[in-house]
Length: 310
Ligand code: NCD
Image (cartoon, protein in one colour):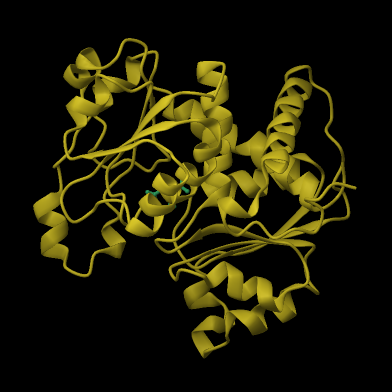
């Protein structure tokens, strides 16, 4: 039995370094086994519930695909805000109490920070946070880490530029808390008003992590091994005029790639809007579609581990 069995995955910082390593090792092992056509540890008889109160393509489908590929079953409420009892005023705590009778593990995405934790308070089964508002998205950070290891051959000692709406982007919040354990140097590149919250930069600096904040993508790109780009999180803007004003304020195009550190790897959790030009897709270091594909094996590993079936 591992310490991940039965565990809620709510924030990246909930995971110990040993747990992160175990998830990575398991995901690499699953990837090798799938490559040779072997079947993976069966989750037959287990049920995953996906409860999505916000739009999703990759997170929901890759979790569901991961479960089905291991012989498990899936029940799902997409558009839960409209079609579940939340529309009648049910609390997430009560939803948690109920859902533990229907499933063995649940993934939730919700617009409110702390929503996954509230569901977990009610549910006795493991709860996985698939994104809580502008809070965290820990499983995206795990697949980002897996991707970095695959693309670079290592994670230790890299310089990583996080570029975009760092105030509202939950994937970067989780990712920097994971990478802080690997001697990463950071550039935080954001337009004014969308900088990384001090609740994140403060603890990083206290840990002795080097953080350089700038609004110039170019100055970060010449010195970074990885450019991790996110879109402006339109749905989090109270003032849509501010969104329109900031739209297009940072763009990764072929020119920027040319000016970047040679061999730079470009990541993006997707969906992209206009922040990475399609002309960049042909560049060999443009790894965002490979990154999305890695979501399946990483989520297979996570499900098998929290269900204690490995
Ligand atoms: C991200 C999310 O939902 O936070 N998407 C994803 O899960 N790959 C990124 C985003 O929506 O910008």
